[in-house]
Amino acid sequence: MYLGHLENNPSSIPVQINSITLGNIHSPVQLQQASSQSNQHLVMGGNSEAILELLTQLEKDIKKVDSAFQADFQTEIDYARKQLGRSKSPAEQLGNIGSLIKDVGINVLQM
Image (tube, rainbow, N blue to C red; front, side, top):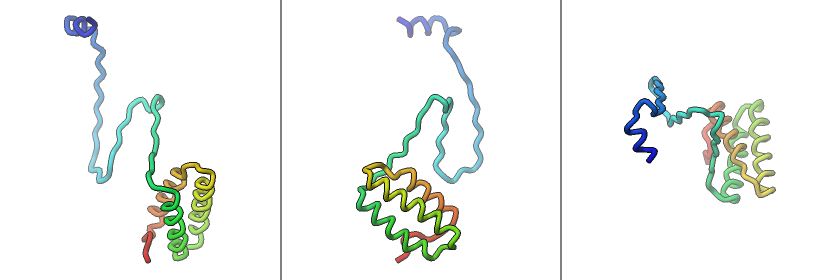
């Protein structure tokens, strides 16, 4: 009934026209409107043992990094371990570690 009403009265159909212009983007993009009314969740897979193994290997790798950055890495690694010990997700800490890796530019997991 309502759809028939809209088809017969096109002036009553709410219309919103938006224009977005993007340049050359060489990475995944997410566009979101009305972000004040939306939620985003980061879901990371992997089990606790695999994450702990990654953190252990990362600790070995950060020894090659400037000492100014080592403290930042160690803080995030320690807190990620605490979160795992509490059976909570360390997703935020892993994201922070990823940002640090990007900023510092280290080669991770070099054996």
